[in-house]
Image (tube, rainbow, N blue to C red):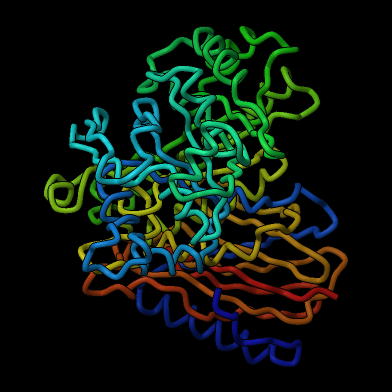
Length: 520
């Protein structure tokens, strides 16, 4: 992340405030927005839990042009690549720092047989992707290629195992193939395929959306499948698996309660429990109205409530808090444009400043609920749904969602702290704050298209000696980065003022601001 600029001292407070006042006055004169005044109080001593880097994780699937053409172009491609991986994508994702990457699905996972994707690429079988367009999958991107991608970008791999159409034996063998050091038939086969060292894959999903595309199961039925499959996901070579059970679609409490009621307490073997929660929208990505945007943004309050409700149910069955709650698919899902899908692939979706705002709303609420969550994976990493990258031929661009993740990256690994916010609207000022030693990170999101927000921040028991900031903003809610204009929506250095025990940050409409402050 580029360094933040414009250090501010107490002596500069008066002149900076005057400049900000002039900005607000000229904005009102131009008729661009009204101005709201907000007061917040940050308590650095009140911990909400550690913001695990895994809360900023991602998801990739064999869907549309996410994998093929997006991440993977093949070693013989004219597109600049690193052993078949799109070079620009690798560089951008490595810079962003992807904590965990989930693969191969999604719905694709429960019809994926891992042996189809190993060995010589020209001898791998061609199969049909029954979930996403019935196209022919050549399996040139398989286990080795995915692990290689993770190594290049610094991500931890998260495999979704096939429960819907697979067998316990198949999943068990995949774990051994990946993790057993050497000397067994499967580990020797891995070595013969070019990887003598074990992959040490920790995260293993036991199926995906088994209430839907992963088998159309009842929760009690899936509970039995989970016990059987997870029983064969064993430690090998010092790598202890982290088995993840399929949780509900959105806030389906009935699924969670019946799944655990059917699970004998002493035989759970569950490390993580995943839920999926998409923020669906009624319009194509670049044709949103303020009303449609507000409707979509209202889903984030429901997501936050779902996290609280699902955590409460988990704690009833798991009072020791051993099972981590995971949101391993989330993000905005707009109405698809047939012409765009025909050109770029299934579920291709343009990404606007609205999407960047949505990403920041999601990350903020994950930070506020850090003690309740283990991992969150936005869907999906390239070209599909709320992606951080878009590609076309040899071009690769970063989206506003990419830059939202970049702006909130400084929170990773820090302690989330309590913020008293005077906002009462479900679609209003959104905040998360974190601290470590003498550093305070504050992210403020203004999701309103029609109002600026002047925010006065007080810090309990501390003085703010300096503050720097960056902003992601565009006045047009449908503004986006295109292949011809890749830098239409990008972060910029911004102004935050520090004075005594407080700060002042003025947010234009549709903006995300992250402030880094020094406390004394």
